[in-house]
Image (cartoon, rainbow, N blue to C red; front, side, top):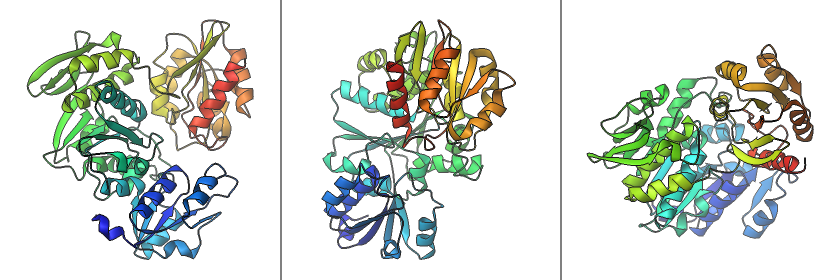
Amino acid sequence: MDVSQLLNKKISVIGAARSGLAVATLLRTHGADVFISDRESEEKLTSYLPHLRASGIPYEVGGHTDRVYDCSLMVISPGVPGNAPVVLQALSRGIKVVSEVEVASWLCRAPIVAITGSNGKTTTTTLIGRILGDAKKKHAVAGNIGTAFSSVVLELAESDIAVLEISSFQLDHCETFRPAISVILNITQNHMDRYDNSMDRYAASKARIFMNQTKQDVLIYCADDNWTSRVVAKAMCRTIPFSRNQRLAIGAFVEDGWLVTMVGGKRTEIVLVDQISIKGPHNEYNAMAAALVGQLLNVNPASIRATLKNFKGVEHRQEFVREVNGVRYYNDSKATSVDAVWYALQAFDAPIVLMLGGRDKGNDYTRIRDLVQKNVRAIVALGESADKVEKAFSDLKPVQRAHAMDEAVLIAQRLAQQGDVVLLSPACASFDWFENYEQRGNVFKELVKNL
């Protein structure tokens, strides 16, 4: 969109939290007539209200009035479902609806690296940012990772790089979003509650990351993932795969213990796999994707190697908290899908007391039953989905229910034996007990630190 078209344009922003406030501020900076609306109460928006009031942008909370439809463009935050009544009503009135990421991309001068996938987005996005930072390349890391793209876009020059974690929800309402480099890590069952239990619809949403890419652009993808391989067949851009299972003529793969890349006809041994600091097969995939991005952005392989050896991972993703009486406690609160737990259960060489549950997203637990049988000592069932967790696993392992996180930590402590791992890896959203997965993880860590 021509930025001049924003002048005096009436725009409603749905969502008053981080992304909503950021995009509203960005739009007003460019002369738009902006109104913010959020269905949540003032009590739930306490931490954002001071910023909202200070912005001077008119707003409403506690519900959406007809004023939100007095606009020609509606911008929605990632947490707003595409089938929300306010969105459906806007569409029925002929109002264009786009995501916050779409708006920020209109104003972005820097090339965009966009990462999506059912699992590993945050780790890979953060790792790419670290690779660029260690190589002294100016960049910004934003998107679904927690920093709104709209809040950093004006700081980026043409010579910089925007590194974005992108969710399917953000992609659903993109129209012109075009990364120079896109990455699809994997497409596995997730968010079935938002996609009517349809993997086809969910996969199509992920595929939107490359829908505007041309032959000048690159799509990096996992060749070992069935759904990903299926959707990338439609890509019109250059594609580069990565794989743990096969040697590739182009891309990244594992050979003789090395993470190897073949880019531009040149074979490069990037790093020994056992020297990558973040462990597990899923992190080998994340490292391959990040290494390919680094090479495409002209980062020296030696610099990439050093980063992969030193990168310690991200908060709330298999994060070591502390050891108590010979039991190690790990915070994997960001594991909000069954597939994420599938990876986590393979990352430890000790019996696991698994803390599982929360707000269910249409989970099918059959995928992890074999791993639970093999690697788990006991399960602590959490939150709204405790019944479902108990029914799914009580025939395999002891399951005890908890009614709050403090109770859950004490139960886990009782169930664990010396040498065990206590793992908070919920496979569910956090919204039954907490505002978000970060709060859930932080509360868990604080409770563990006080044991």
